[in-house]
Length: 300
Ligand SMILES: [Zn+2]
Image 1: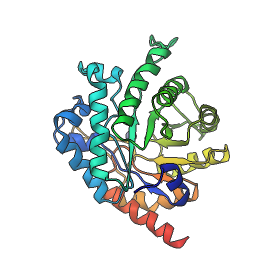
Image 2 (image 1 turned 90 degrees about the vertical axis):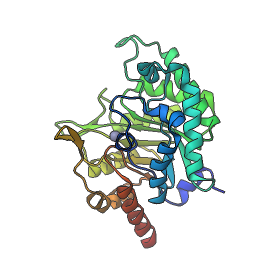
Image 3 (image 1 turned 90 degrees about the horizontal axis):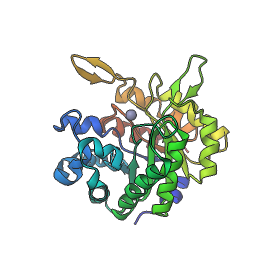
């Protein structure tokens, strides 16, 4: 039986899975269709993808619920199925991972701006995240991961909604770009130092960086170091396989599993305690990350 996640990360580095969206499309999900519906309608397809990551040696699987809030499901007319799809997603991931490994319940951005920039009321948004987090917890998640975030007001809604829904550990991962002076900011102008302070104030357990444009795995290592320097204790890092580019009408990512795995040690040196992959990473990337992490553990 697994230890609580926050105990396990103090003993060893945990490996997370890689990209989900691109894998679903490879499995036949049409571009723009609702991937979360597959948790209910095509569970075997979701389990097959997650099984590849489990076979690659992942310690943690992130549920297929990135767009599982009512706001995102409403784009597909599926806003009435938040509980069903999120609960099913956590159960599927648990079936894949068993009782020894971890399921992280995924919450992604709601896709718009809060008042006064946009028209969404923060209380409504917090309620939506509450409903999503409650379903993920009910389905058996070990933690809630709020990821690809850029705006502090949205993060606050998600964290408070999750805290209201369950007692699970909360992970928040932000997405940065490198700006011309060489430092890092989210799309909404948040720096890693500022994020570390705000996450500590909100009672977030693990802070991270994932995805991003114009940044690679070595930038993620620098961001992890900035988090640590700002007092963060537990850090998760999930880099993309490089920046996406179009080739023959398809999105491709250039960073090979070998190239990325050769830089995993930088993430470890910077103090990351959970390492995985974001867009463009594959089971092969995760398998080589496994070898890199095990190699680093062996040298300790
Ligand atoms: Zn990504």
